[in-house]
Amino acid sequence: MEWRECTQQDEQAVLEGLRAYNQPYIGTSTDLSQCVEEDGRVVAGILARLLGDCIYVEILWVDESLRHRGVGRELLARVEEAGRARGAKRIELDTFSFQAPEYYPKLGFREFGRVEPYAGTHGRYYFVKELD
Image (cartoon, rainbow, N blue to C red; front, side):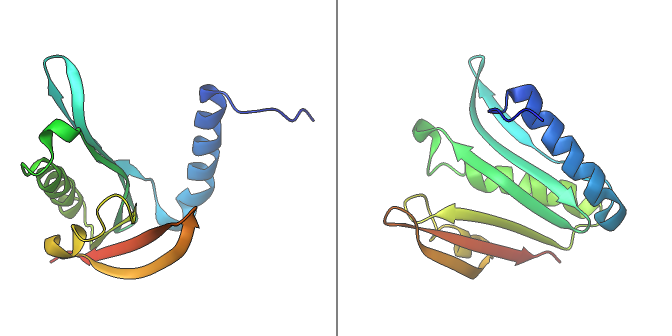
């Protein structure tokens, strides 16, 4: 055996291995990711997957110049809509205390856990939203 740091190709192999292991239990995961492009560059995006009947948001990012303009809300709405069309019953995500934990309850999410401190003095907050 050889032990070394992962390359991007190795990371993809790890993801594919885990997805293959999980598949008999939760089915095939479906990519629901969306991005926003402006002048040829990505200025916002959400990386999300449907796992069974749960949407898991890995990353939600909006460029600072576009914040407070509804871009994050729209990205979440698009992912929720795509997930609902495929049978999703809930959406789950997490965020750090320095990002925007107060944002998600305004969108119908409820906090179900937190770790404080998580990284240095910053906490990590976990949210879920039941979909109608």
